[in-house]
Length: 539
Image (cartoon, rainbow, N blue to C red; front, side, top):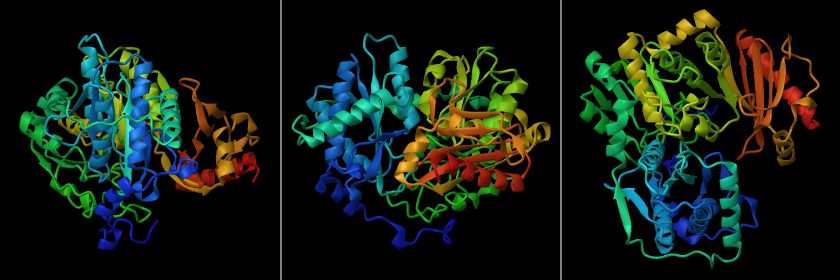
């Protein structure tokens, strides 16, 4: 934890936006260097122009690759394009539009030149493809999510509306690097004149009454404070309050690509993570002013829930409450609709699922795994421990197939309106019934070679028989829900578990751990987890 974590940013912490944008156009990446190549992680290509990792050359090549990919897939409908409030998002949007226009792609951008949250773009794709057109739509959302202000991000969402799978992103990244290495001669560009518009905000907000009981919220007079954290949801919250007559205050309507109003995250960086107590420190000063206070990150795919009685909720705690509430208050959902969770999310969700008589669908990290289930209704809720989730409409049909932080934030108000209790109170009731787990994620040093071995590690390579005094019941390198590779390992006992995964950006691996036997036992689990993993990696 950095000494300045949770304190206001200083002038010296802020980026020079002009320098950032100038570098976007000036620096030309060398894709023979790994750090300057196009690499799609779980949420698209991310990097900074200052590091020659997110530059005009990258975006032009990625967009050309997407054009070629969608042609190969027979995707001929409109392509929705949206951007968030990061300083590199507008330049990247301009580049992408030039390439799309030159290639004859029908493009739809925001009608009001507004920022577009990731869930609003997913919602638009699904709405178009549900309407029975002869063609199919897809989309590009330009965002590095909660990453620091110096970063840019570029993500492709195919016709299912959610994050593209690794087959698609792998092809797009390889083709983009190939284009750049050959001098970008295959990139077509033209002035973006033939661009249509779409009211992302209006369509999204108008449809909210079909997934959230906004009338219950209005009748109960729930006092809502919404902080967009300088992100793309800022005008959405304003319209939600106006349209549905809610007692809703946008706590901070300021948009600033430097994010100078933020408090620093745990490591001393500016990071718009609504689940981080350090990043949310200034928001928390308003906790007693509202019945519920919410935060979103820059593209509004993550949520933070603050209650007067509980403060900022741990994302795992809120997911468990949301699941308990939704599966008992959505009578039109299928009786066999499963509960989706990533395998590094809390075991509290497992216990809630069992009490509800619902099937648990446990998948690797990455929201893309929930997409098929959300589309066909076989999974009614999908959630990640990193404060990302989405769920089905009241009628059991798909809403978004990407994470929706606005939706999960509004759900907290519905829960208060309908139950008369805060999500924090409801979580206390769950702990009284199922136990009170302690959860934490820590990092451990690892070389690039060790990270590569960890990513391919098989559970059978772990020789330990016990973990923190309890017999090991499972050593997983594949997710129980879909058999997909975890990209690491998960070790389970009856009262605790840990999972280890390599970081995609730093020379560390992440240890997620949870214990139902208290903080001291969790510390023991973490220590043994590191020893177990290090032994499996050869020290």
